[in-house]
Length: 506
Image 1 (cartoon, one colour):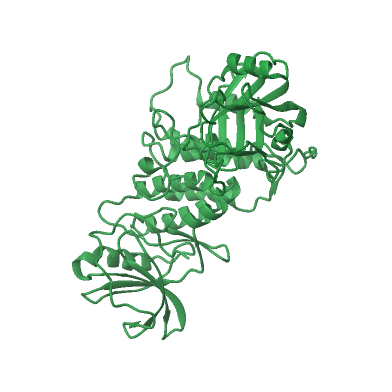
Image 2 (spheres, helix red, strand yellow):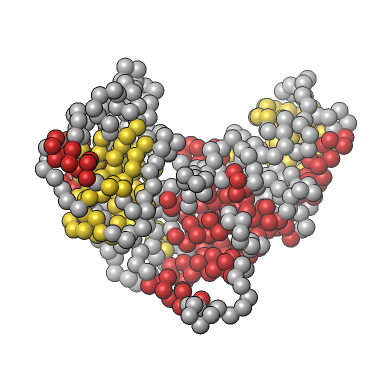
C-alpha cells in the first residue's frame, strides 16, 4: 500500500538512505517494520511501530538532514498544529543531521491514484464525496495560514473504513492557496476520467495527461466518458480554467458539503445524471448501462453546485451593467433551466448491424450484444495481423446504428474492451441494402457528424462522440480504422470488443 506518492521534489533531491533495515529503532522509539516505497523526492517511506505508545506509524525519511531537510520538517511541524479528520496526523519531526524523518499516522488503506487504477473512474457521487473531504482538509490548512502544496492522487489516501485523508504537505515559498484549489479541480478531473491535467494543475506526474483535442485544449470529463452530470463537469472545468478567478477552499467546501450530506442517493438505469423528487411517479426502469443518479430534493441540490459555478464565473464578470440588448443573469438562468436534458435511447438488437464493404462482417451475429445492457456480453472483431486490418482492401469496420426516426443526437458513447482504438462517428440520410454493395454505399456516402471528434490510438476504453445536435440523424455509424493489440494473442493479435453503445438525443 502506498502511504505517500509522487509529487514535486521537496527541495534538492534526497540522498541514499543506505544501512536501514527492518528492526532498526530510530530515536530509541520508532521500530522499522516494512519498507513501503520511495517517493519522487528520493525519500523512503516505512511502516513502523511506536514502541512507547504501541501504535503503528508511518516514517518518511530523507538524507541528509540539516538545511536540505528544513522544508520537509517545517511543513510537518506546521501541519501537526492542524487537527482535522481528513488530514493525516503528524506525531514527530526529527533532524539527526545525517538524516531527517517525519513520524505520522499510519493509514491502513490505498492511495487514490491506485484505487482509480484498480477500479476505474469514479461516478459523480463518489467523486463529490472524496472531493468534499479533501477540500475540507485543504480549507482547514488555509485557515491556519498554510498552503498544502502537494494535492494530487498520490497524497490522498482512502482508508479501509472509508475515511479520506490528505497527506504529505510540502508547502514552501512557491506554493499558494490558489494552486491548492486548482489542484482540487485536477483531482476531480482525475477521479472522473483517470487522467491528470498536467498543464492546468502545473504539476508533472507519471499519471496519464488529461485528454486533449487536436489543438491541445483539455477535453471536458463528460466528453471523455458518459454519465458525468453537467453541473459537475462545469465546476471541474471552471476550477481548471486559468482565466477564471478561483473560489476559496472554504467556499468550495461549503458548497460541496450541501451536495454530500443528508441526501438519499439512488442509482437508476442508463442515461445522464438527473434529479427527481421522491413524490414523483416512478418511471419504468430502462436497461442498465450508464448509471443515472436520482437525488431526493434534487432541484435544490443541482442549484447548489450550479450556483457555485455561476459564482466562480461572477468573480470574473465585468462590474458594469450589461447592455440592454444583452440578457441578464436571471434570463440566462431561466434559459438554461428550460433547455431539455439529453435522454438515452433504448436501442434494440435490430437497430445495430456490422458494416464491412470488403472482407468479412466480423462476428456479425454478436452485434446485439452491444445494446443488451450487459457489459459482459461483447461484439468482437476477428483477429488481424496488423492494427489497420492488414494490406488488403479492408480499411475498417463499421457499426451502423439505425434510429426509429431522424433525431437531434447529442452524443454516442462506445464502451470498449481495451484502449488504443481509432474510430470516428459518421452519419447519413438513408440506409442501404444489407449487402456488400450496400455496405460500400454507406461507407462512401456517410460524412462526419457535425461537432463530433475522432479518437486516435491514445484513446481509452470509453469513447464519447459529442455532437452539436444541430442536424437530425436517423443513420449513424461508428467507423473503426485501427485496432489495439491483444497481448494474449500471437498470430492474429489485433482485435477489439465493443461492450455497449449508448445514444443520447435531445
